[in-house]
Amino acid sequence: MNMRKILKIIIPIILVFFLTFMVFKIVCMIKHKQTIEKQIQTIPNFSFTNVYNNKLFTNKNLEKNKATLIIYFNTECEHCEYEIKQISKQNEKFQNFQIVMVSFEDADTLKMFATKYHLNKLANIYLLEDKEIKFDSIFGKSPLPSSFIYNKNGKLVKKFKGEVKTEALLKYLSQQNGN
Image 1 (cartoon, rainbow, N blue to C red):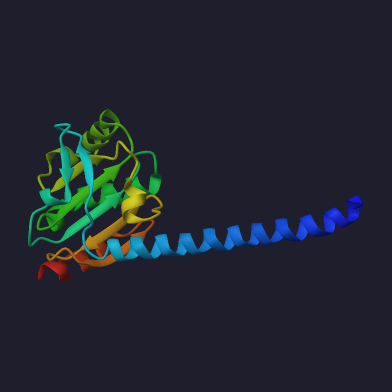
Image 2: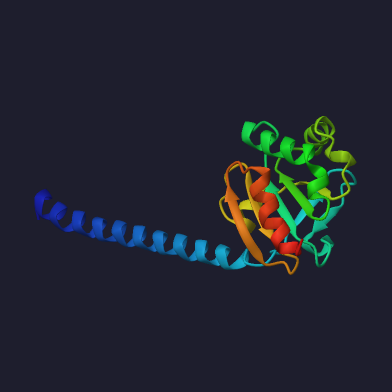
């Protein structure tokens, strides 16, 4: 056989394998996304480290019968900083809710950020470090900031990807706590 005949056989085979592989990857990606969407319909199992005592904080540590706001953020993200600064300024409006703030940054950086915005003085805020960078595998691909609002029964009410005004957060949180 000459080279042309060999190429006429090999190229279609390679294309079929490539297309099959791509279809397989797409189907896997869709299934994974569906699994995550189903998983976050209720507060999923999670385990992050509390920056103040270096102990694990899990979904089981959350108060029952209380609406929950989970925020994925980074201290160097301007949108995250703005959103958290607004929550801190209006904390009296958020006191009836629990706020879980998660970041992949180290504890010292997070503590400095908390001090800057007086988060360390607020009893309803849990500041957690995602040491193993597993937030995305639990809550799905999440841009910074991402906010997830769960009602007092732990059911997902609303998720926001990107910066959110405190009025919108309070609107959904208040409805879910029965306020």
